[in-house]
Amino acid sequence: MGLAEKRIVKTYQEGTYQELIKEINTLAGYDLEFQVDWSSISDNKYSNIWEDSFTKIYFTPIIEAFKGITADEMGKEALQETLKTIVIKDENDNYSPKSAYSFEGNTLTIDHSPFSNVDNLQERSSYLSEFLESKL
Figure 1: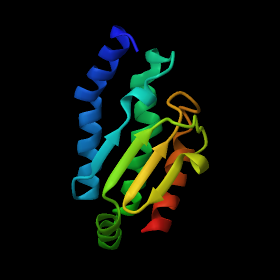
Figure 2: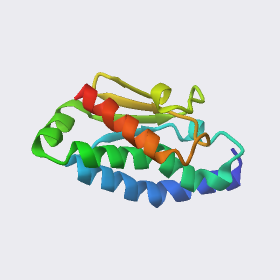
Figure 3: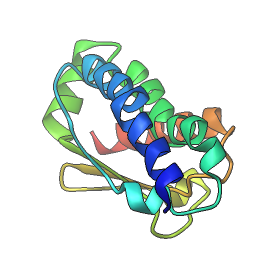
């Protein structure tokens, strides 16, 4: 990753990422721990779409899933008792929600390619919501 790409990631980390984390934590009702492997999700030639793709692939599905899960007190309590950490990375170039999400202990791991199927928001959001609800 060159200087230009490092600047793109830093700008995202200091702006959009902070806003998204705040929104996710507000929906959850508590502060989750986020572990983002920035080097793995920004290790490609698509730096021109990172701002859009990071948000659509990793964060918007979490927000949409949390909206449904936390719609009532039962969902809020279940989420707070079960989910503590969210790990975001790209180790296996997964492009399907069925292979990208895993849950172990109190940790949701999202291992998804940062440039594949960017606009499949509905599919990722729906799958993540069902997946998380099955773990709560």
